[in-house]
Length: 140
Image (cartoon, rainbow, N blue to C red; front, side, top):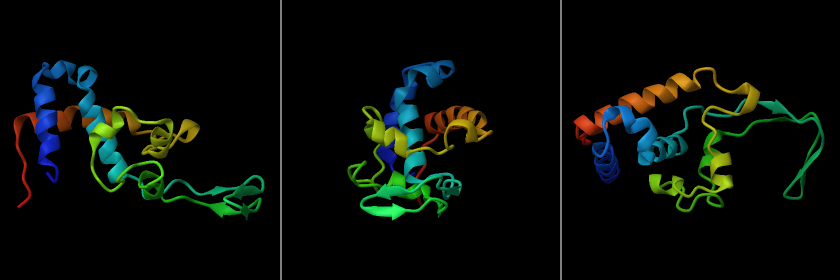
C-alpha cells in the first residue's frame, strides 16, 4: 500500500500469465517478496551464538566464548551492501550480488533452517498475487 507503483508493476506482470503460472513465471513477484522481507524482516534477530575461537573483526578481537547475536535488520539495512537501504526497490533483486543475497536470510540458514519456511513461501506465492491482481489498496 505504501508503494502503489510497485503494486501496479506487479499487477501488470501477473496479468501476463494465468494464475497457475505466477509462481514460476513472474520473477517480479519473487523480487517484491524478497525486498519486503529485507525491509521488514520477520525475525527480530538471528539466534544467539557463542564464538568457538578468537575472531578479529575490523581490528577488534571478539574472544573465544563470547556470546554474540546480530539483529537481522542490521545486515538488511547495511549501506555498504544496499544502495539507499531504507527504500523499497524490488528491482534491486534482479541483479542481486552475493553480499545482498547473503544479507537477507529471513529463515536463517543451513541445518537451523525454519521448519515453516516452505509453508510461508507457498502462502506468500498464493495470497499476495491473488490480492494484488484483484484489488487496489490505498492507505487512508
